[in-house]
Image (tube, rainbow, N blue to C red; front, top):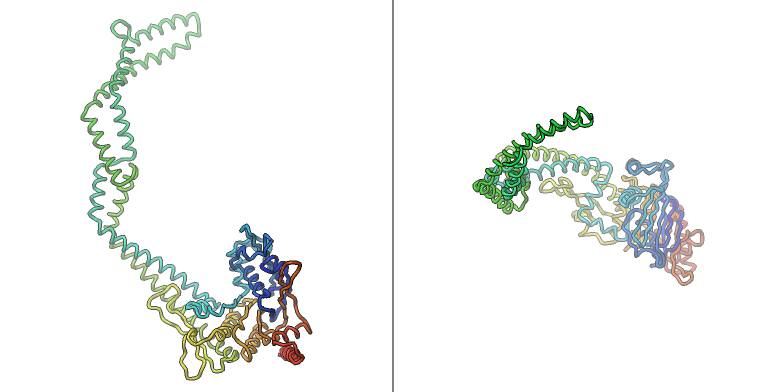
Length: 559
C-alpha cells in the first residue's frame, strides 16, 4: 500500500504530506482546489512524463516522494528489484523523484538511482491509476486484447507467441529480401557479367597501381640515373689516367700490413680493408646491371604499356566512383552477386522451408494463445456481467467477441472486442455504439475490479470515475469502490456524497492564501468535519442536510 505521500513545490502545492491507510480513501473539495494535482503527483512518482511548467512559480525544483509497504513482493516485482540491484527485504520501497527547471531530473528508489523506464515499469506493478478520461480507453480497438493478455493466465502464452512470431517474422523477412534481391540481380545479369569480366580481365593485384606509378617515375628519370651510374663506374675503374679503385685499395692494405709490424693499432684496419676489397666487385656488378636495366626501361614500348594500363585503371576508378582498392572490392562483390544468381534457387528453397516451419510453430503458439484468451475472456465476461447488475445495468450482459484475423498477425490469430447489451432481447453491440460516458465509467470500474484481482496490483487510484453519474447509480459505484477496497488500497477523487460517505478516510483538499500566494492544502477529516463536508456536497447547510449527511455516514459504517 501507499503509506506516505509528500509533494513539494508542484503547481499550487508548496509542501504537502499525507499519511495514508488501507481501505478506501476519498479526496473531496471545491472545483479547482487542486485534487487532480495530487493524482498528477502520484503519476509523476510512477513514471509519467514531467514538464518544468508544473514546478511551482518562484522555485527551481519540485520533489515528489512516496513510501510503499508490502506484506509480500510479487514475483514480477521481485525480479525487477533483483535486476536493478534494489534491496527491499523489509517490504518497503521509498520512491523519490526530483524535477528541475534545468532538466536535470533525478529518480531514486531506496536511494538507488534509476532511469525513468525502471520507475515506469515499477509503477505499473504497484499502482493502477485511472484518470478523469481513463474510461475512454475502453473504446480503443486494442484495449480488450491488451487487458486480457496482461492477465497472468494469458501472459505466459502471449510471451510464447511473441517469441514464435519473432522467429516467423524474421524468416518471412529473410525470404522476402531474398526474392527481392533475386529479381534485382536477374534483371541486371548481363550488366553484372560485363562489369565483372571488365575487371577480372585486368588481373588486378593489391598495390599494383602504386607500383606502376613508381615504375613510371623511375623511367622519367632514366637519363639522370644513367649519368650517376657512369660516374660510379668511372670512379671504380679509375679512368684512362688513373688506377682502378681495387688496385689503390690493395696498395693501402699492403702499406697497413707493413705499418702493423711496428704499431698494433694499424692491424684493426686490415679487416675493414678486406671487406672493402670484397665490396668493390659487387658494386661494379650492381652498376653494370643497373645500367642495363635503365637502358631497357627507357624503351618507348615499355613506357606506353605502363601508361596504357594506368589509363585503364583510372577509367574504371572513375566509372565505379572508387579508389584502386575499391575496384578490387567491386570485383569481389560482382563475383558474389553472380555466384548468388547461380545459388538463388537452392537458397530460396532453404529460406522457404524455414519460413514454413516458423509459420507452423507460430500458428500452433497462436492456437495456444487463443485458448488461454478464451478461458480468461469467459471469466471476465462472467465477472463483469455480475458487476454490471450491481452498477445499475439490471439486465446488462457483457461479452468478449473474438474476430479472426485474415492472416497471422503480430498480436495473434484474432482481435478482441468488448460487446454489451443493456436490454433483454437486444443483440450484443460494440461498447462504443451503445454506452454513454457515465456508463463507460461504471463499466471501466467493473473491468478494473476484475483486472486488479488478477494482477494483484496493491493500489488503485480513481480520479472522478463517478463523472456523469448520480443518485442510485452513484451509490452503487460507491458500494463497488468500498468492496474493492477490502482487497486493495483504493484512493478516489470524487465530487459525490454517495462515494465520500463510504470512505474509510476522508481527505479535504482546499486552497488558501498564505501571504500573497495561493497554496493547496489537504487534511484528514473526522467526526463533525466529515458531516460538514458531506453536507456541503449535498448542496446545503441546513439542519436537515446535516442530518442526512450523518445518516449517510452511519449507514456506510454499518456496511
